[in-house]
Length: 183
Image: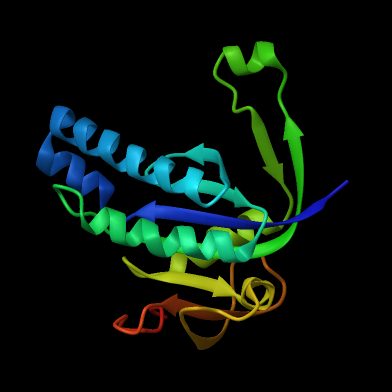
């Protein structure tokens, strides 16, 4: 059985170059600060961490919480001792949540897995975002209701593995550059 949820996928821009420039120990300290900031915001916005690499796959009950998280995440990354930039993709759609058993979790499996087309759709949207940018699908925009931030459509985009073109909408504060994704 599926539930409709908001999925947010983030990715820190140029993380491998950063690791090479800083070295393992300094980069590990920066990732610790990154993770703490990201997870503190997650608690505030009632989200669930599903996966982490050099970004996150996050699950929210509401698009408003997911968008609020994304915008606060960008601000938090900019304020780190070594400022970071991330790109973020937000989509709302049906997902299937699958819980792993305790023995598998004890051996390193994630407690909850997310299945369904909404997951790769959110990832595809994130993949065309620029550093510091949050892009939403029309489904996410429609689930927001009245938005306290500026939204601007960048038109329809074809995404690998997604049959129909998706309208991509950028969300940001009034000072955001609102730059279309690169072709």
